[in-house]
Image 1 (spheres, helix red, strand yellow):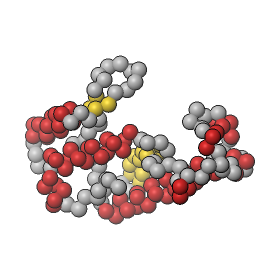
Image 2 (cartoon, rainbow, N blue to C red):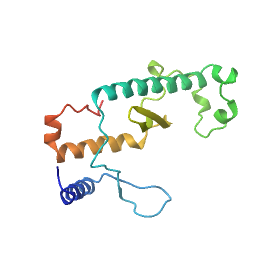
Image 3 (tube, rainbow, N blue to C red):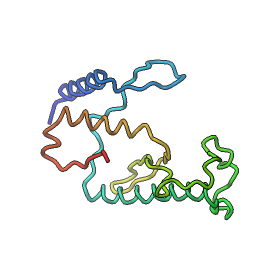
Image 4 (tube, rainbow, N blue to C red):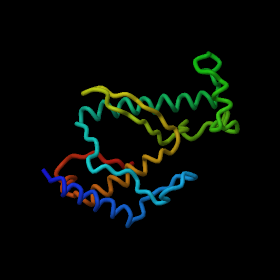
Length: 167
């Protein structure tokens, strides 16, 4: 097990690499450092294959359900007409796009990338914190973090069966 100073040294190396390859972001109108490093965790969450399979199934189901809501809202709006969700917050939302009504995208997919923020609430229990049906910034964070981890710890990836994050 690496010592705390070794872990801090690795974290500094990761941060230096992120700066060198310009993996930074800025929050418009917030002030402060315009070149903040993306969030990087030297100790990413690890899941056993069986646990991940369960999460993956639920995440895919949720992404499908969110897309089904979008299909309906921009289609027949039955969910609103049936009173399951109120129409006003939908129709008056700044993100609602009236010109899209009636348009069916290729393969019926409105949201190709869905960010499902999950928190662990028990040894085998999880809770969805929020859903993002837009291009979540976390996608790029996840991909770049994986690249950094692969550069810094190639043996970790050679010696273990780690699921890819691309594709």
